[in-house]
Length: 224
Image 1 (spheres, rainbow, N blue to C red):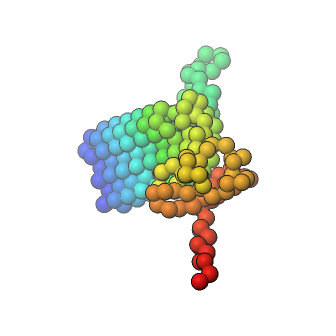
Image 2 (cartoon, helix red, strand yellow; image 1 turned 90 degrees about the horizontal axis):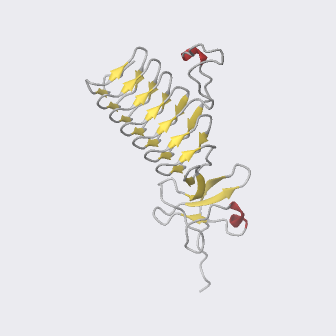
Image 3 (cartoon, helix red, strand yellow; image 1 turned 90 degrees about the vertical axis):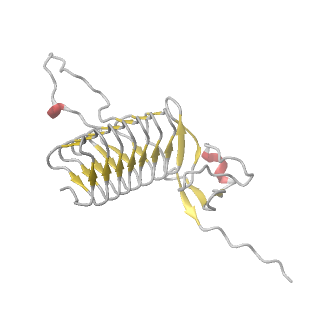
């Protein structure tokens, strides 16, 4: 079902059984294949491919030329940069060992999930079968081959964690005022990570290998 408030450019191609939520915009030459679901108030840029049965949440931004293949789930508030590629097979083949042509029914999908609020940089490649955690940031051009912790900042090929980011997207600082390091061993002594932009505080959660937002302790008043 296409909500009547959705804005679909005339050059976009939407196959049957597609759902588009209220207030969502789909721009030029984008293809949305059969069974795909897009939530409310999302923006899909130009020349994007959204493959069959992909699920996209609300208030998602997908920029030009991104390729999002079958088996992908994108939660609310996710950003996908231009030219990013989100794959769905870890062991792809065009033909079987006996030479027969493989079709859509033969796909060995490895589901991939982008959790709420995370960001995928321009030109990044997300290998099939992984999860990018809530409010994580994947740097431009990164090749992500394993799951990314919530609030982690990863970059490179293969992508490695190089720090931590706030829900607002800025890098977190430790108590010395420097960028919070990637190594969690540091947080045994220095547990408070701070965003200097919005003032949020975080602490490291070892079991989940992620961060949790904390309410900072109130400043103690000196005796009069």
